[in-house]
Image (cartoon, rainbow, N blue to C red; front, side):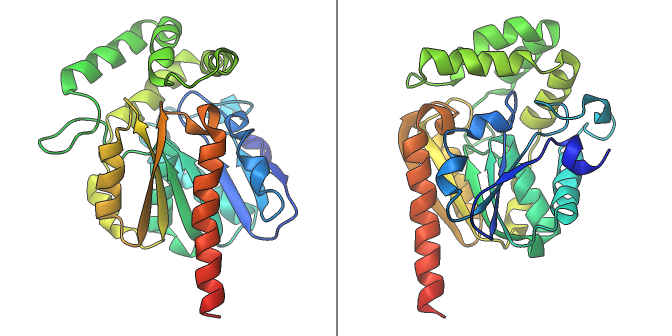
Length: 273
């Protein structure tokens, strides 16, 4: 099976420059349905499912390959090469933001810009670094997930979506989480929440927009400030909203943040032309 089918790639839009959207833990490409279409007039919009999520080829999931985020980084780079997508604008939510950072460090020529939406390089509080979770709390959360992923989703997801999420959207999100195979979810959760990529941040040379929510229990706004301080040529935009899924709960604000940044970039490029 080629990577186009493996990841159930969707492509649309009138523009020539590709804009690639990558979803976070528990969701799939459908999570971008309120944001991605806003860019179809100016960009070639590309959506895909991480292996193990959505309508991806579940048989392609390899527990050794995806033990860390490196397997997803390899997938992203291979997909961009197969689709012949050079110089993409890459938009990654949560863990996919860091997957994009690691991919752009390895092959910067494939990326023009990164947009990191509610991303975090480390979820554990460490001294002055506020990642969102104390180690005992995170171990308890992962232990609950290990014991009963369905029950974990039902009780945990509503607490991290924020008060701005409409009930119908919450139901859709819970349904998305329920579609993930529990064994895959357990491993992906550990690859995500136990990772620490802070030391890699200074290696990124591709310009990045950091979009963080003002109130996010998973990736606190202080994480956005940390990313901004450690990523060269980065821009920080804090959204006045709550929760970890602003592309669902606050799509208008999310679209506006991306448009502000990309419009500024376009004006700067025109000025230097």
